Amino acid sequence: MSDFEPFGTTSLYDATAATARRLAARSASHKAIIVLTDGMDTSSTLSARDVSGLASSIDVPVYIVATVPSLDQRLMMEASDRSVPSGAADLRDLAEWTGGQFVFASTLVETVVAASTLIDELRQQYVLAIEAANGREWRRIDVRVRRPSA
Image 1: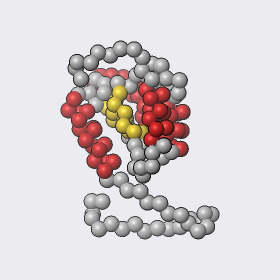
Image 2: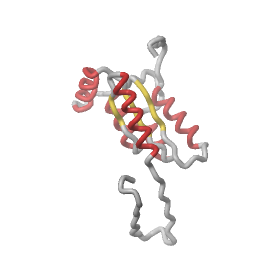
Image 3: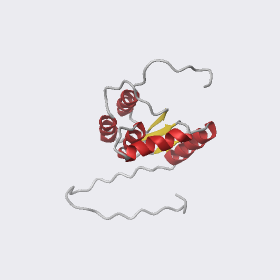
Image 4: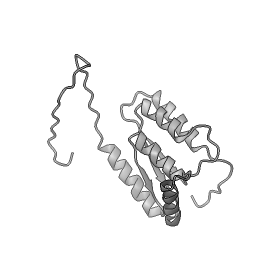
């Protein structure tokens, strides 16, 4: 990746929304979006809230790995705590609102570990769907597994 030179603008939220729309058209039962980013969105027409609404409506969690230096991580999160517009806060919210995860990675090793952790998490997810005869009543269910680590 060191051979690539950055250029142009970044429409991170627009691209994430377009990916969610493409996933909605697929019949797969397990869907997720993994975003590897420097955290900068310079030209999207959509906001993090817009994208999270779209992704949530089609049950697509968004997992975000922000590849920024350690110093920038702290500054980005401090800005979000002070109610200053912050790319990190928007990315964190997008991930959390969709049931995904947001992580920082400042080195290649941290990026590989983050990606590996996300892949492991996605491989261990199960979907349980129940349709009640009467949709107005709550039902108690008991789920049991044979493997303790499942």
